[in-house]
Length: 365
Image (tube, rainbow, N blue to C red; front, side, top):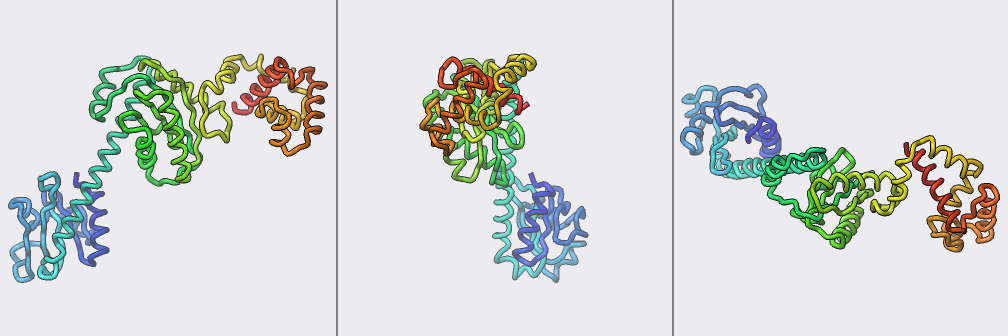
């Protein structure tokens, strides 16, 4: 628990505040951190005495000859979970040091506790990510998953649903803060949250209905945006068996891939038709797209996109594009003349929409 890294941080923090040399010794009495770097790795006889008796050791100037290589000062045991794990020594006149020696000891033990808690959180987080990795495997090792879940203190119960959150901007330096914020919204017992890579997070919900999921997703998006995050979430379907979790995950990734770039939440059901197009071979898609859209200008293709986003509503589309209704009507007629398909007729609009989706998928690949 008392690593050299932690000990050096404690020495740095306390030495700066007290303007005194601080030594930290491990449970064998070896100096592992000191304001005087020449003393590192030396045996500290005063620390050995503290480790032996469990009591503080005060060494005044006139007694220092009894302790070879030890300077005047005070040496106090460092306790962690009722066990002495090391010794902290403060160099100087003991009469001046006694008043704040216990305070230094308390700060040291508090820093150790914080480091321990951070390590525990890191360890638990790693287990969560391993559980999710196991759930995505073709052959699920249920025993391994159950063991890890027991260590985390969590159970997975149906229904299950997977969301994938992508961050374009993360204002936090500590990535664990993001995990904790997300878990707070969903509930630590109802969501397994972890990193897939540096800018993607998985959210696996358990025993949470679709209605509750929607509410918590909405709350999570609002809270994260308020904190300065720029995020998009893809959401897979609800599944009722653990082996199907991988399908919900793949759907969530597909929703992210095919969803609109400015849309905070995209459900797989929103892009399911587009997803079907992804399964068509590239040559067929290329021929279809070129036949339908090949002779249209970028301006007319953009007009089509905005028209479909406006649900074929001319007034809404004209307003969205900041153009006059008559200009829009003229463009739609031009599209019909060039392609042979009328964007205002449902059957033709479907063909044109498919061609646009194929064109978009080509740009993504």
